[in-house]
Image (cartoon, rainbow, N blue to C red):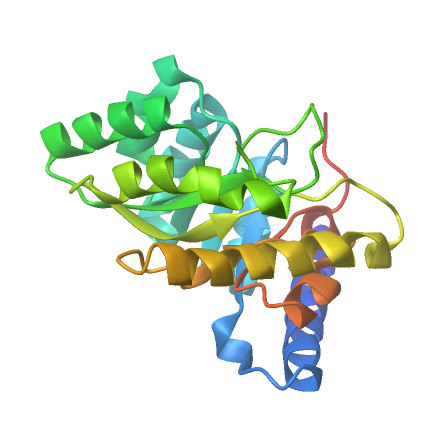
Length: 241
C-alpha cells in the first residue's frame, strides 16, 4: 500500500469513527447513518483507495464523469452510486441508467420525465426530493424556506408520490456553506421538521431518509437526524479541479 492509499484509508476510518461517535452521543443507532463518499473531481486511484478501505456508496454530481468511474470500478467493487448534483432535463435518461439512487429530484417536470424513463427501463428508482430550506437563490430544490408555506408544497408532492416507477424515500437539503458547522444546525433542524411535516401531510410516502451534512458539518447533521451524509474532501483530500 502506498502512502497515498494509506492516507485515504486512515481518513475513511477516522470519518466512520466520528460518524459512530456522533450517532451514539445523540442516542441514535449508528447503523441508521449511511456514508456516501463524494467522488466529484477526484482521480480514479483515490476512489479505488476509498473502495479498498471499505466505502460502499459513492456520490457524483455529473453523469459523464460518473460513467467513466463506473466502468472502471464497478466489476471489482460494485459500489452503490448516488446522484447528488442538479439534474438537467436532457441528462435525465443517462442519470436513470447509471445511478442506483437520486438525491436531487427538484421539480415536478423532472419527476415526470424520470418516471417515464424508469418505466421504459423497467426500473423502480429510489429518489429523495431536494428542498431549499435556506431560501438561497443559488440553491436548487422545492422552496421550503418559509414554514408557513409548506402546505403549498403538498399538491406537487402528492403528484410525485403517485408515480409508480419513482420510490420517494425521503428528502435532501444543502444549507449555506460556512466554516463553522454550528451555522448549519438551524437548517438541519428545519429539514428534520420538514420531514416530520411530510410524514403527517403525505403519509403514503416513505420519508425514511434525510440526506444532509458534508465534510465540514456532518457531525452536526447526524445530531439533527441525518441518515445519509455526503463526505468527499475529509476522506479523499482536496479536489483536483
